[in-house]
Length: 135
Image (cartoon, rainbow, N blue to C red):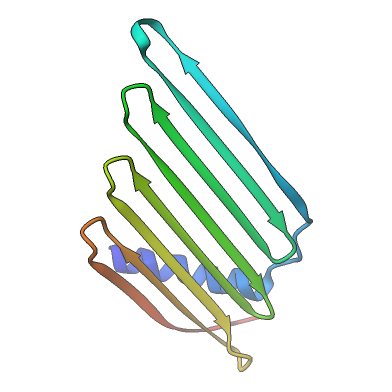
């Protein structure tokens, strides 16, 4: 099931790389939300986004007053028949999950794709292949 999901996801990314329209440029923006309750309970959540033609990045953080939380970053770039993306999530205890994806228009009616996922124990799994592009 996971391999089929990764294959479908990366095939969709390959299609997006082939048909992505130029993005409107928008500089950095974001927000911070703080919720504080009784007995010192609460959390702070933040999000920062930057979009430029051919790229986008998003950073997020969630921290509780009790010391739990995570930080994540996601970056993507596209253009000239290629799409690249990465995402990393790191928990406060140091565990890290990451994923990288690449999709390329081969120029011959096919697209190549690859995705690699790395778990908190450092083990990686990947899927890659080539799909035919039908118009």
